[in-house]
Amino acid sequence: MIDPAESSRADLYRILARLWLAAPNRELLQSLQQAGDSTPSDGHLAAPWQTLLAALRSTTVQAAADEYEALFQGVGKPEILPYGSYYLAGALNERPLVRLRDDLRELGLTRDPQRGETEDHIAFLFEVMRYLIVGDDLAVCNLERQRRLFRAHLQPWIEQLCDTVEVHPRAVTWRVVAALTRSFIQVETQAFDLLEA
Image (cartoon, rainbow, N blue to C red; front, side):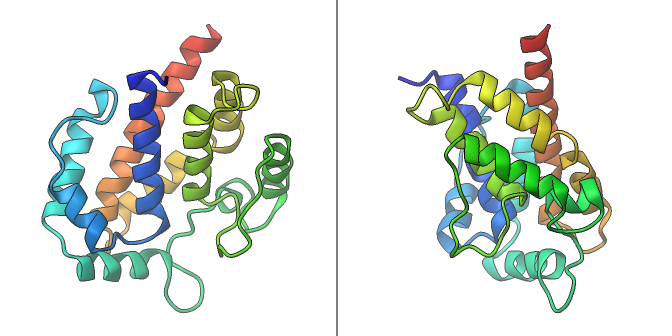
């Protein structure tokens, strides 16, 4: 049975993955708007978690959809690209994506061809982290695999993405999503630092 703290980590990865992937639909928004103020993980995350809940309580499905489209979709090049290759190599589909695919292949993971996002999308990587926390295959789903994926494919660029979102003039709800993401990444970084000490 999974440890409650690990379950909370996995839940937060799941929630953040969903919010980075698309604007919340009515069901998700209502669920988060009605969520209690209990933090899904570490106490360091209490304030950003409560700020996220407050932001979600003050938005609507349409407002969230409009904001998400303005930031991450739209005609032509989106305002913000939530892909690792963009931050690590300056363009999409570059060497960092190739290295990530090699590492995912070692884990037995591949992208669903029905999804438009490449594997270096923040939501995809957060889902992989969630899987590595709660998955049943202990040869793959273990702390060392989590650490290696996080260090190589998340830690080097996620805070840059958060910086980009937080200063964007159209970001309201996703400014708060980015702030929680930053805090969570900092907690994860410190935990992996301790593991290596």
